Image (tube, rainbow over all chains, first blue to last red; front, side):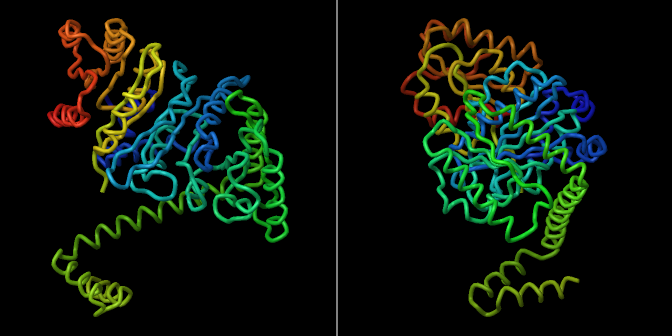
Amino acid sequence: MNLIQDTLNRDRRAIARLISHIENGEPDAREALAVLYPHTGRAYIVGVTGAPGTGKSTLVNELAKAYRRLDQPRTVGIIAVDPTSPFSGGAILGDRIRMRDLAGDAGIFVRSMATRGSLGGLARATADAIKVLDAAGYEVIFVETVGAGQAEVDIAKTAYTTIVVEAPGLGDEIQALKAGIMEIADIFVVNKADREGADSTVAAIRMMLDLNHASHVEGQGWRPPVCKTIAVRGDGVPALVEEIEAHSAFLRESGLLGQRERERVTTEFEYLLHEQLMRQFVSRVSPEQWDELIERIVRREVDPYTAAEKLLREMT
Amino acid sequence: MAEKKIRVLVAKPGLDGHDRGAKVVARALRDAGMEVIYTGLRQTPEMIVEAAIQEDVDVVGLSILSGAHMTLVPRVVNLLRDNGVDDVLVVVGGIIPDEDVPALNEIGVRGIFGPGTPTQDIVEFIRREIGDR
């Protein structure tokens, strides 16, 4: 199996194996990503986030089917992220339970991924796994985050269109005013719209949007629509697809797509640089020196800022 | 830094609707630090093999209580082979009569765990088998 060539030919085993190698930090993964990189940048990346139990997996399942049913069907990649237990390091990845309809369609690839300690709602390997699916020719890639609260906003830096899923009765008006996840939505979905309180959830989101609109000009011409869906029945999903396409068209026409891509690449590059610099630097400090410094900070003989500056001065 | 995790697909092929045992095992494997892809009830062999490929698992665990294991397990094993997946450990849990065990071993099922098996035994078996690679 040639991981690179077979991935470009959309061989499912090669794609899957390469994603594992990325997750495990194996040396051949970096090399493969370098070769695949020129083949990326073609996929449209859609993030789906929201609190646990709002129906994200079911919605992604229906969205994938809808994209496959278009007059010109698009191939779909799905990355579904679930949390790693901080205690055991293990994880139960259960998003496939809601995606059983997608089995048997060669135009769909579903991969479950554990966060392995990342906190922003995605895994470290998510961005690179997206590149693999992109290079393999999947045209639309859905990234489902862990059941997110208010801080898990990394998805907005990864996806072109971010969908925030709410459900009636979970968060009331007060929640809708909170910062964080509510501010990253390009599209809101009120799922389980047959439940009591759906209309007041929609109203609460709209009110928040009105307030935001008054206070700043972020969004630059795009007001996030609020879509009602009943994902288990597929209701409202075609309309949601239209909104995704409308947002995509808006980003392209306004030139914001290029800007978002630039921001995304910048974030990723800075992160990698940070990581590599840190690794290089730490490797030059002896374990004894390191331990001694930590011990001095613990004993309050030196504060962490001064210690960091001193170490940097000594090493450079 | 990144480390290799054992990935396990826990699947329930066939029509019986009892997944308590599968869930208990899934939880035990998670607590042992493994990544468990849980796919839920009523999976066809085709769905199981597709999931095993896409998730690049090290282990496929099948839970069968319906008595259909002599039909379902060979179908999964054959489909894995037909798809070129030759490096996956297949284990079966559930109600498997002793007289069926040799036939299942024959087609390549390495571990068979009946009711009452301590979950730690399953964890250790998987670790031992995967660690050997």
